[in-house]
Structures are given as structure tokens and as C-alpha cells.
Length: 563
Image (tube, rainbow, N blue to C red):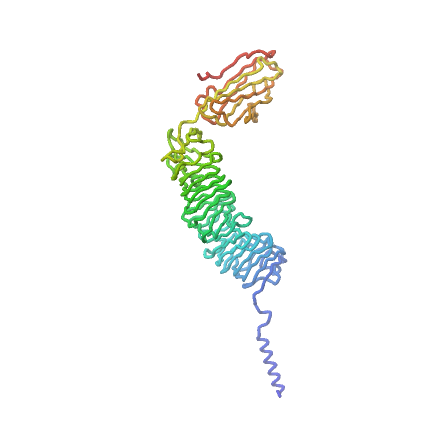
């Protein structure tokens, strides 16, 4: 049996041990802190903004769908959080950076923006909704875009270069603002959100140097340019690239991708080699100075060259135009460096639907020949629409002749024949003559084109005769007349007048009731085609004012007519 002193000593020892033991309130186990926004400021250091007080290192942060102050500021010292999770949308995080083990964006709807630097040995996962990363981040274990959209607007938004970005089928990585992610690898799969691209370029000129295609992949480029240099690769057989969006995708340098290319929308400038072939759809444009295995055009455009410079685009296989346009720039005498050329392993043209578009940007010599298609296999099948063998057409003030048997016998060539010329002659007459004051005076204006070429965009103009008011015009189909402000001339325009052709229009003017003496009307004609003899391009008619019904009083020719 213990004595009273022994009992008291034992109780004292137990009390001392109890006092020495750590109290429950001093335990620092990691917690999950949920943002409420119920504080008096927007700061993370405001305990009222969190359900269980200010976060500390090791905590997990949760940003729910229902909360206040969704635009808030991290004013804490740099802290490593176990996880940061967004289950709600509408958040905009500003202030200082933080480190992570993981960060996940998974709102049921809406978007979130993180404007602060994210560091640490962690990963960022985009699961749903939209997340924007706009800072220079250093997190090192990569980025997983499993769903939704991740928008980056900084060169280092995807973290350190050691961590790759993986874009799953149905998800999208967007680039905006003219950023360059360098050699950071981006693995792409699928068509992206709504089929608009697993990788999208939204604005500015964005650059990437290590893009891996894991199958059939769509890239979308909006009102911007995306440049991939020396780094377009594929994960294995079955890789293919489709361009949509209407912007420009430029692929430069040495790349290992060898799958097919499809240009549904926009400008694909291919300055590389190895693809098995390219197809160009109705809203697509294939440019470049590289090489492909073959080209099939259903309605778009093929245009050798890159940027503002011409070049040689090579197709090892055949080139087939079921429709669409082939365009070449003629800026000098040397193929490639000065004028565009398509090097083809065979050429088929649909004469009912394939157009030739030529841009002559220098002064060529008469007799100069351009080989616009260097065809290495067999005779050319078909012709360009409206341009049979030996056809002559005008471009840049010159008459060019096309041949599908040029060069070594099976190339497409253009030969400069001469300056384009259309000799227009105008005559004018008036009725009635004399014309009574207050009556209507009708001018008949006839224009004839003595050639040898078509007059393009002819324009007939006539000043309103003094003492009259313009009323109306009678014109053939394809022509129209108006009195542009401030006047007083009437201008009539048409699309063209063929060589040997003519056009006649009538202009009606109301004679003032106070008119006396004679009324003088003058008309002239010009066109966008050179006129080697312009002396007969105008004419004047003088009509006396009298009782009406008489013969012309006098006819004044402004210049001597051509014999």
C-alpha cells in the first residue's frame, strides 16, 4: 500500500509530464484551406477569406464555384502548397508567385486566369473549362491538358523546359501574343475542342520548336502566324497534319514528320521536306519552298514561294488540279529567287475549273520566257481554264502567251509577246437638234475597241452640259452609270470591251426652260489597258436651242481622228 507522500509524488510527476507534452493546438498538420472571399480585403493573408485561416506551407488550396472576391491577390511569402485546385470559374489570381506539387483546373464551367509565377517540382493539369497562364513559370514536372483549354501568353508559361506538355484528344493548347516556347516539347493528339485544333495560335506570331504528332492531329491558326522550326515530329505510323482556322502555319527547316498534309483552311507555308503528300481544299492555300510527295487540289490555291518572296515548291509525285488556282509571282528572270516555279512529277489540270493567276512585278523583256511548271514526267494533261495551248492574255501591261509544251517539251511556260494595247475610239451625237428649251436632250455615245487587246475596266465620262440637268442613262448589261459627288460629271463603267467590240450608251439631260443659244456636250473614255493612240478618246457635240426637231447645228471633234 502506497503512502500519501508516494501518491502525491506520482501525481506531481504525471502533472509535470502532462505540462511537458505538446498541446493539440500546437499541431501543424497540413490542412485544406477553402477560399470563401468573406474577408475585408482581396488578400490571401486575410484570414477571413479562408474557411480555416491563412494557408501555410504544405496546405492544399481549394477555390470553389461559390465564393466572393474571385479576383484576389497572393500577398504571402513564397510558399510550397501540396495542391491548388480550381473547381469553380471566374478566378483571377494576381500578386506574388507560389510553388506547387500539383495544380489542377477543373471547373464545371467558366475560365480562370493565373497571372503569378508557378514554381516547384510539380505539375499543372487542365481538366475542364479554361485556364490562362500568363506568367513566366518554373514548375518542372510538365503539363497535362486532358480536357478543356489551356491558354499560354508567356514564353515560359509551360514551366521549365524539362517538362513536356501533353495535349489529349479533345483538349486544346492555345498560344497568343507572339510568344516563343523554344524547344519545350508539345505532344499533340486529336482535333482539339470543337475540332478547331489540338494546338491553336490566336494572335501575333507564335513559335515552337519541338512538336510531336501522336496520330492524326489538327492545328488551328486564327488571325495570326504559327512557326514550327526544325521540330515537327511524329510518334509513329499514322501521323497526319490538318490545318484549319484561316491563319498561317509555317514549317521551316529539317523535320522528321513524313505523314500527309491537309490544308482545309488557311495558309500552310511548307519550307521543309519529307511529307507523303498534300491536299488543298476549297479554302486552303499551299505555299512554300519545300518538298512534298504529291499534291491534290480540289478548290484551293497553290502558290510557290514564302512570305513576299517567290520560290520553288517541289512535288516528287504528280500534281493534280481538280479545281482551284495556281499562282506565280514574276519578279525577275531567275526561277526560284526571282520568279515562282512548281517542280512536279507530272501535272494534270481540269480545264473547266483550274485558274492561272499571274502577278507581274517587274518590267520584262519582250521575248522573255518563264518556266512556271518544270514538269519531270510525261505530257501535261489538260489546260488552265480559258487558256488553251498558245493562248494570249494580258498581265501587268504585257501580253503573255502560255504553252504546255515548253522547255524540254512538257513544261508550262509563259512568253512575253508585247505590251498590251487597246485602241479606243469614242463618238458622240445628240438628239433632237435643235432642242427646245425645257425638252430632253439625248446623247448617244459609242466606243469601239480597235485592239489588239481587250480594254479592261473601261470608263466613259461626260460633264453635265451647261444649261441642263442629268436625268438618267440607258446602258447595256454589265454597265452602270452614276454621278459621283460632288459632280458634275456622269461616269459609266463596265468590265471590259473585247478587241473589235463596241459599246453604246445613252445619257439623257433636261434642258433648262431659260436656255438659249447652244448646248455643248463632251464625253471621253479611258481604260486600265494602255491606249497607244488616245487622240480619238473624246468627242464634243454642239446642239442649238431652238424650236426642236432640226438637224445638228455643229459637230466639233476635239482632235484629228486616226486614219
